[in-house]
Length: 355
Ligand code: IPM
Ligand code: MG
Image (cartoon, rainbow, N blue to C red):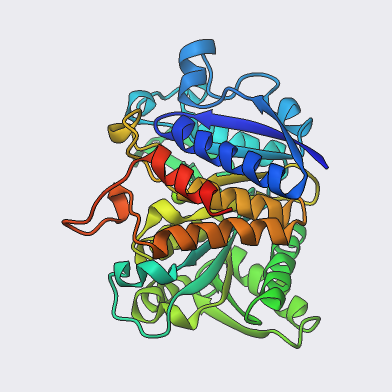
């Protein structure tokens, strides 16, 4: 098969980590008889510098002409302060999610066997959970307002809204993924306070009756934050709304002790899906061959699994990564004091050699 891949290399370490991921894709292509055709797409901070906006016209159309999108990282302190949405890199991220209909964000947080000691918590069960974050609704996309009142001075508001349809489609994803994994689903909400959460819970319970084989539980978001640090091994799949998922997925990634290893997938009902490491653009180490390319390489594995239905190829990548880590190779972010450190290029090369 020939697959068309949109590459949004982006800012900071983005181009370096995407570079290594592309070489891994090509190696897989050679081994399994696929070809990949790449289209570079400009988005984020570099786009602000080059064409004056972070989300250039036609970005979504160019992506839609491809089978999947691989994104490095966008943003950096250089573009951090504008009040003009066109000049903020985040605008591009939110827009592409909306325009491509990427309502489901899958963020696995797993302890890789070779790095089990990187987990900063006492934990004997291991960690292998998947956060399913709603990605195109809720307070991040609700109406925003800024106005001056007579008695209270300046005031701002962000509207949080969810529809039955939005909840049902992400809830279903949660149940389906739980079915493919450990058959346990936790739905996180704040139903003791928020009306959106009460609707969320109602829809989830209705869906639950269709999935009697999945063990289901509601957990309030504050409790979920505590449980994640207390006993992360108890979780399998966690489904939640946009902002809760944003926060909890960062918490979950941190407890694996190695944010440089974690991939993500953003998918909708139609192609293309978008795949990206969850780490940021790390401008402080950009261009120095220091970044860990593993999160981006594992994002390619997710692309193969979720967009192309190529589980064997996905597993080959994951096994190659584990083999290299098991041999003790470390980039700076995952090295312990005194351990030998290798760079981005070398890490990519070692992983390809295992394929
Ligand atoms: C993420 C990021 C983005 C989000 C920001 C940069 C808009 O934090 O992908 O989690 O909140 O979705
Ligand atoms: Mg975030």
